[in-house]
Length: 313
Ligand SMILES: NC(=O)c1ccc[n+]([C@@H]2O[C@H](COP(=O)([O-])OP(=O)(O)OC[C@H]3O[C@@H](n4cnc5c(N)ncnc54)[C@H](OP(=O)(O)O)[C@@H]3O)[C@@H](O)[C@H]2O)c1
Image 1 (cartoon, protein in one colour):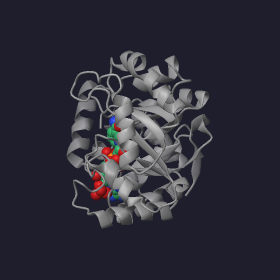
Image 2 (cartoon, rainbow, N blue to C red; image 1 turned 135 degrees about the vertical axis):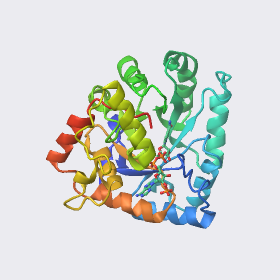
Image 3 (cartoon, protein in one colour; image 1 turned 60 degrees about the vertical axis):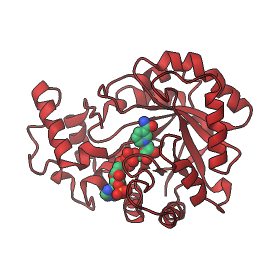
Image 4 (tube, helix red, strand yellow; image 1 turned 60 degrees about the horizontal axis):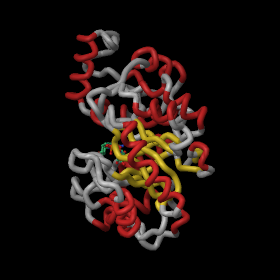
């Protein structure tokens, strides 16, 4: 597995990393048991994955991840988790980030979290988050409870919300990492955000290389219809029943394979998350990361088709 620098942090991260949220939620939503989770985590480690992403919001994922990693040498992996600054809609009380961090440390049986992220900053909330909570985050870092500070983008209906761009423009020195979506139908970040991240040495975790719009026929069709109606993306040159069939050649096995390969191609991306809970899918996604990138003609065509696109999910 190829590693990439996680921005300016001095840490190398595997190109594929394992997420414990999303639809599978580390198998909590898909009937995977503890033994299956252990197999998944060990298959990831055996394949060179060194970053696991979780959140206090993903059911029992933090605890289950801690259990699945039991006995593994701590320096073999990085832990990223998240804190929700608006747990019930209102801004959290001062001190609750510290309490949550200590709970995450306990649940994952560790004395340091490699990455602590503000979970899903909503449009309009960027400045309040920075003013209210970044000082507490910095204190946690000074105390040695966390190493790197980041935030994640929200899957909003306004996919061009500029939260990552605000972070990189206003406080690039604060953020070590940002988690955002970048994929075949989500190329928006490549315009300004990824070049800014590279300029400032901010690590980028790509949270959504495939998700619904690429993999679910109904969602993909609905997105294409919206784009055709508002004229923002012209998909008329694509075969309606098989719009991505032209990508499947020279070893590219499926649209999902193409999606993972594409998700890693920009040099501003440090790591691509997969939210799978099955060893079979994990290994397929590892193969995508180890395979050559998409050919330049296909990459160029995707750029021409979707360079302005930002599917919300
Ligand atoms: N705002 C945020 O902070 C935020 C938002 C979204 C995601 N995330 C993070 O990013 C991670 C990834 O996001 P995600 O889980 O939503 O998206 P994802 O990795 O694209 O996974 C979505 C679905 O695709 C399936 N899948 C994955 N690989 C496959 C393959 N090779 N073949 C067929 N199906 C495959 C998985 O189901 P199976 O289990 O059946 O494989 C999963 O349910 C999350 O786990 C989380 O850590 C963060």
